[in-house]
Image (cartoon, rainbow, N blue to C red; front, top):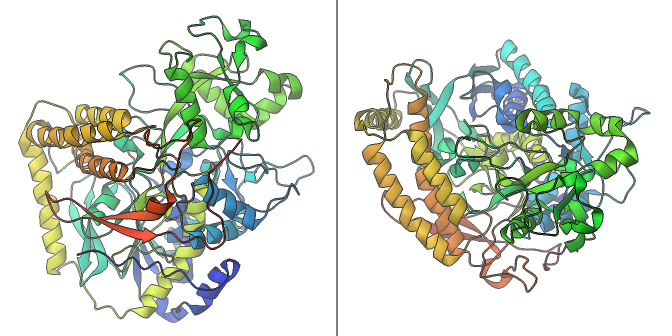
Amino acid sequence: MSLRLDTHTPSGPLAQKWDKHRFEMKLVNPANKRKHTVIVVGSGLAGGAAAATMSELGYNVKCFCFQDSPRRAHSIAAQGGINAAKNYQNDGDSIYRLFYDTIKGGDFRSREGNVYRLAELSVNIIDQCVAQGVPFAREYGGLLSNRSFGGAQVSRTFYARGQTGQQLLLGAYQALERQIARGGVKMFPRTEMLDLVVIDGKARGIVTRDLVTGAIESHTAEAVVLATGGYGNVYYLSTNAQGSNATAIWRAYKRGAAFANPCFTQIHPTCIPVTGEHQSKLTLMSESLRNDGRVWIPKKAGDKRDPRQIPENERDYFLERKYPAFGNLAPRDIASRAAKEVCDEGLGVGQTGRGVYLDFADAIKRLGRGVIEERYGNLFEMYERITDENPYEVPMRIYPAVHYTMGGLWVDYNLMGTIEGLHVTGEANFSDHGANRLGASALMQGLADGYFIIPGTIGNYLASHKLDTVDASHPAFKAAEGEVAATTERFLSIDGKRTVSSFHRELGKIMWEYCGMSRNEAGLKTALKKIPELRAEFWRDVNVPGSDAELNQALERAGRVADFLELGELMCLDALHRTESCGAHFREESQTPDGEALRDDENFAYVAAWQYAGEGKSPILNKEPLVFENVKLSQRSYK
């Protein structure tokens, strides 16, 4: 049975939709808010902001994270900045321009109403964060500073050197800690969600495992918010923290939540290249570096000279050459493919040949080392610690790597999934970025969802539904606890010969090879043959030592990798069915004569929302048509 995908997007002019919707939403009386409990899974920017804000409104909030502190959420790793249409630079920016840039950057595969609301709320986010004391960079006179990011011709990105995510998370964290101290939020650190409990078609709680003691527990609520981030670690090597995983959203998918556009995964163009099999993750070098750094390669293949000895006329600044209007600030998907293309031609640098130069010599000569150090000092230091090369003196070497996932659980305008009462925020949903996210927009979405959208839409849901009281003794909770315990016991009883990590690494190689920066029909079919075989071997030969009554990281990883082995197959299935190229999804069979992504708007202007059909059965494809009333569909060009 297919799903009914009602977006609940309000009618009326684009610029009035959110205000109209806020007026039409039902409210919960302040005195009644304390009667409601809301679960928030995840404590990064989206989850921490949502938990703090809903507690401040008066709701009882339970917040869960698998880290030992909310401060360790992966949001802390964001570097370059956060977009907002403040137009402080008086360079032609506006809410509409940010809306258009985001729609175009996503290659026209996102919902107009949601994206406009994001642009509209961006201006409020900066005010909120400044009020919290977030130390954004400022000009000499004290005004907030801006810089540029990819896919835009205006400077709208607010930043705190190369640690913007950390500073924004500290703002959300202090708001969350205030509510914890007040008693409005009960925090559950070192606790992992392992199942969603659905009663009468509505999300009513979760089942968790205490990662220290191994205790399996149920938690009830009137509504559940998932803010658990993306699934980039399906590739094994990514810029995500090693603990980042898809378990919460995948378990929700298997309970009935549709998964939208899983093949839309972003490859970031500026990461430190892979150096060998020993690596377990990759390191991002912020997109902000492309403001002042110039990307180039030697014109001659196999040129092993010191880059400082290669004269200008023997260098190819290929982004500036191919995309003169945007130059080094071309969007991520385009810049990544361009780097891969020149490396595939044998022009890459470094020992592996999988790298291009990011050179700051011109900027240092023009502005002075002090200015560059002030803008990017911590990033340069991080690069030198990892590579033992000084980027003030020698060009950085960079190469694309998996960074972000635009796909996620399907949500409507209220950020509610196809299970009533299940709300999904931040990178865990598919909502705003289409087929490619513009730089500095992830922080914007997480805080818009957490501070400004979900506190209102949760109230609308609670005020619109009379929910029966349930507790952890309900049969649905007991059944879910039993399933979690049985799966845990199964992991420990296999007693195979291979480690969890070896399976994860092998899956990552399959995904990168066949469903990475470029995809084709033959490769995707190969992946769809290899992944089920690997999954069968995993359940036959994985080794999970230790017990379930203690801290057991092998057991934690086993559950996450088991989910990746299923999710990876869905990603390849989605990529195979979408025969067009759009944004970061590049099908080799669908490209323009000059090698750019070629969309097929007639057949694929929709959101692909996949529905779980049961163990061993093919998922069901549901389609949400994308309607464009305010922008004109066009071939994306950054030339």
